[in-house]
Image 1 (cartoon, rainbow, N blue to C red):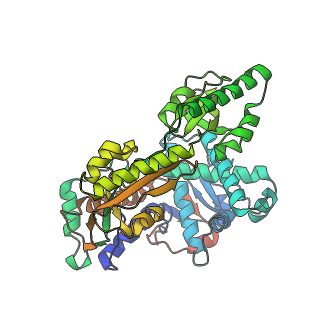
Image 2 (image 1 turned 90 degrees about the vertical axis):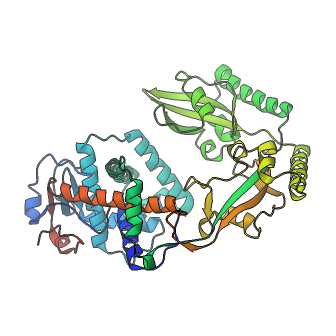
Image 3 (image 1 turned 30 degrees about the horizontal axis):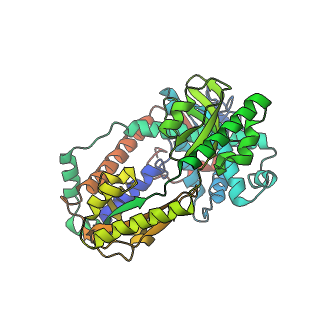
Length: 485
């Protein structure tokens, strides 16, 4: 659970450790470095294929060599540009911090390669495509303006740079995940972690609520469902029999706004890495290359899928999505149905939990009496100050065990539903208590253990990895004695 923490020495130290963990220990820099001249770097082992270059030639200034990778002087400038493109104020970020972050990513990526950890080049390229599209859409800039911002001469070299950055980052993330993957913590370790915190320095946890809801979804008529199915069948027949373009159909008619603009393309599905809902995957993996599915239903609507390419366990697919329309009468019926349920609860004829089990249309919460699960912590508790704005707005004025009025909600697909909510429990802001807050304390203890494991791993690898640092970067002050002064 997110924490509201007192500004005390012990907890501040832990926060610093967590920050280091998240940023790949950004303040520490690289491994087992020797102070060398620039000329010596040019003679580094020829196995170096750096980010990934053919050899350690000094192109725009070689700042460092880390195993099989090099860091160029210009890479630090690129880091600044990346942060600025994300809206980060870089005024107070020192170049040595970014340099240390780069070195560490190369270290993790280098070791990932040594450990034969794999990343998908095709997935990385798709991620680059997505990043470029998002930047252009959000900034309103043209590709020419984007290249000028990143100081690149052409789109090809820009995408190659983005590919290498993404690949290094993915390898580094996989390596770090591997280090902490099997780390567990015992109840005794949790107890020892808690007891070593001085009483006056224990964290304060903010107010937490448990929230339940009952949902009524307007019913779609069978005639409307069949209309949508028939429409998709017409698309398929026109493509197969008349040579119409699946891509054009998707652009013109698909009600999935994101993929529709791209001709229905959804990218690759991997049999071993589930993405998309079960019903969608089951249809997609049964198709032959070039085949188009019959219409089928998922929770998002009705689809047809085109199997564009099969590459082993990966399948490239496109789809067309249509939503059945809900009638005015169905909307009225759903709202009135929920108002009657609310009245029974208010009159004490049925409990909120029993009403949810009996009448809610939301299968994910129905069995738990309507209790919402916090997606971050996977328990029933929501910290008031960390709650999603939409949910907070809906419950902020509710007293405990008070039933809200019937609320209308519309999702990104324009699907409408009605719901009522209740705050079923409240824990006010309090100092950490071992018994009551065990799960949150356990998470803190596990985070600390993982941080220590990463620090220990890095300390060991600095002795094993070939690293050289050149030029003014030797003057960076690192929090650990990596320069062996």
